[in-house]
Amino acid sequence: MENKDFSVLPAHVGVIMDGNGRWAKNRGLPRSKGHIEGAKTFRKIGEYAGNLGIRHISFYAFSTENWSRPQEEVEAIMALFGDYLHEAVDRLDENIEKGIRLRFLGDRNGLSEELIELIDFVEEKTRDMDKVNLNIAVNYGGQQEILHSVKNIAKDVKAGLIKPEDITLDTIQRGLYTLEQPPVDLVIRPSGEQRLSNFLLWQSAYAEFWSSDVLWPDFTEKDFDEALRAFEKRNRRFGGV
Ligand code: IPE
Ligand code: IPE
Ligand code: MG
Image (cartoon, rainbow, N blue to C red; front, side):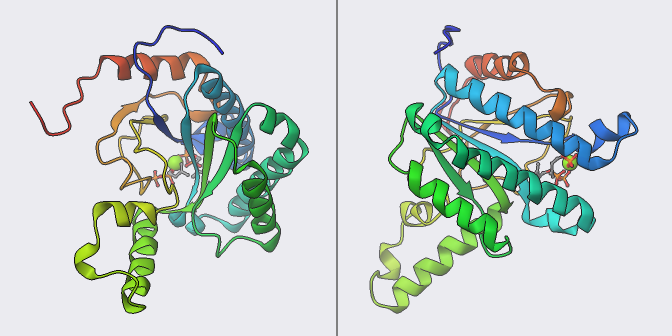
């Protein structure tokens, strides 16, 4: 594990992997090439975060709104997700040795059968790992995730398993894709945008937000360090004084 002497590390980091398209455009390349480079950055930063001792990290790869993009681009992103899952299967022993638990955040409906099978396999095989929890959000929307939790609670109420007055914040939280994972402490967004774009809305209620003008394919370990250094200095009050 790298020792960088951070006085405090976020328990859960969320990363909005943005700027792939602009990166490609700046080079006169097709957008899909930007996604290929972005996927490399995802692997690099995921590994780096684990080495630093970040216990939970969630990467936003494809939103429920991203289906509105040209079909060719959507297919390119899904193919990259498939490549990543195949690689995770090939490297299962390595991941297990490192204690990496892989989780998918999002709505499985809408993904191909092949992707769903790979997700189920990788999640099942790594479910007992707890050193690094790496989440990848695909076909993910924060509002949709809350809706999903609320619908399940409504079913439980209808079945008489729970009374409406017994519903707590925790009930809703346990129904989210992140299950028992801690709230997000730090959201990182490259590419200069200053918005959440429907990412981990519930989990980020008190997250610190850090953005950078660097486009995701150019994002380095140094940029990640910079975000963590900024986080160290934040004065988090959670509504107190
Ligand atoms: C990648 O960045 C994130 C995805 C939605 C897959 P973009 O493709 O949004 O890149 P920009 O914002 O167009 O530069
Ligand atoms: C957010 O990026 C989604 C992902 C990074 C997967 P977008 O590029 O889709 O967000 P907007 O459209 O700029 O808000
Ligand atoms: Mg974008």
